[in-house]
Amino acid sequence: MKIQSILFLAEILSLTSPLMAYQWPLSPFNVQQPINATLGEYRDTGTATCPGPCPHFHDGVDIGGAQGSPVYASVSGIVTSQDIGATSIKVEVSSGYFMYAHIAPNTVLISSATLGPVPVFAGQTILGTINFSPPHLHFKETDLSGN
Image 1: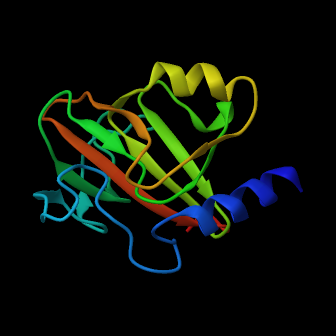
Image 2 (image 1 turned 180 degrees about the vertical axis):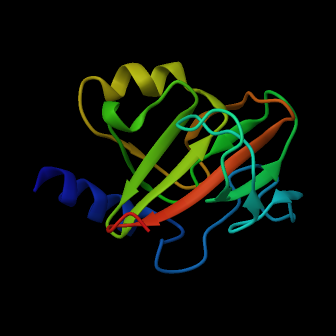
């Protein structure tokens, strides 16, 4: 119940809502960013769970950006320690979550999340920096059922 209350509060305080359009996770926020790969593209490359040739469909959008560029929350929500990976962060919202991958997560956010849920705010909270070659952010939205 506490996490749901935090999610609700974060969405109310947000300038955007996951129920509406949300801003770009890279600044400047009001400028179209380069899209290097789209949702649903067919791929025959390896993945973290399937090394080597592995047919699959791309499950997000790759947004081009310079190495080290700050990555901001696109929506307000919460991050918990379980939502932080070595190269990704998930922001939970009431309708599911947003994942930001191929980043070096913000170390302050990581240490705070080990103590409990941490609210993040759209366009204000830096989740990490782009840390991948070629440099891009993998951005994914998922509903409560995991789709």
